[in-house]
Image (tube, rainbow, N blue to C red; front, side, top):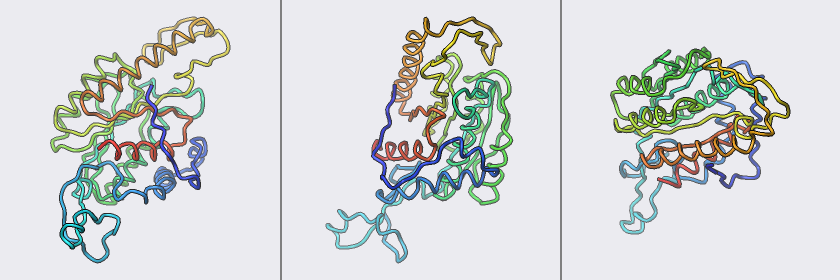
Length: 304
């Protein structure tokens, strides 16, 4: 199972996901989360989605001195700053799974709700980086599609679309992501937010199709802690949220086998993503969102 532990400033205080549910405005949630981790980003000259170096340009008064390349200064005795793809209007498309299984939440908030907070926060953060932001929600097909643009009015349109997302039908991962890739005509960053509850082959083929179009694909797998640890105390009738199939389960008999299976599936997703140069991050819904984002963005910068 992936471990994205990162050293985090001790002074940073992170927000319990339950506290976010008491904030009425999704825009305020996004701002609260982003401002909660952005203070820790000062240690890096550039930290965000678009970490691919684009070009140098001459330093201008008012530029962030942390972006100065001191090695180049040492060779030329002139100040140059690095620009990254994120500073040249990268298109970031947020794709949110709204299938029935995302409506689950046994330990804390529902996965879909957490996914909405994550999508809104990523959109707000991307906008602050001057990136264009788009949004797509799906279940067995595309529900909502908003192309990527970079105005403040467009960000509000994206946030409203995220806010109105509701659990729908069963997932059809492959067909939907093929349709999504046809709509995204300009290469950019594609962020998939999902529990990845579908046939694993369909999931990996769908993600691979997005990546094959030249997109930088980031996958956030959102799971409830009980889905990771299967810590149910009593025998119960379990119901599949997508197929409605029922099964009587005695947790003590199945716990170790289940944990082994879910860990294996997560590991397989991570391996397949790495093989196709896609980012993969596992987040459980009990984890503070700002802490998870901080850890992921630091890790992303270290890898590229």
